Image (cartoon, rainbow, N blue to C red; front, side, top):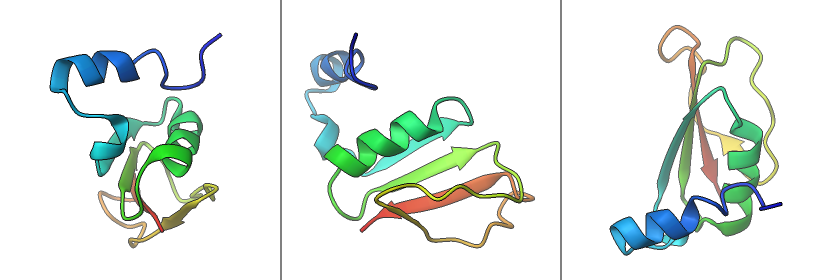
Length: 84
């Protein structure tokens, strides 16, 4: 079984000629946000931002990422995290 994101990384590299580490902005709907957060914490460069749409008033703590915006953005539906 592949690690989260490993199936798509070769396709992204082939299609864009950019590695995962070259991207500094990631976005997901509520689905699999924890797996994406783990991948970003492990592989992305510092300063990378991660947007999650579909959250509500309870915002998760994500290992290796810091919540950096007021949770009232888009009526409490969008959270922005940053890798330090």
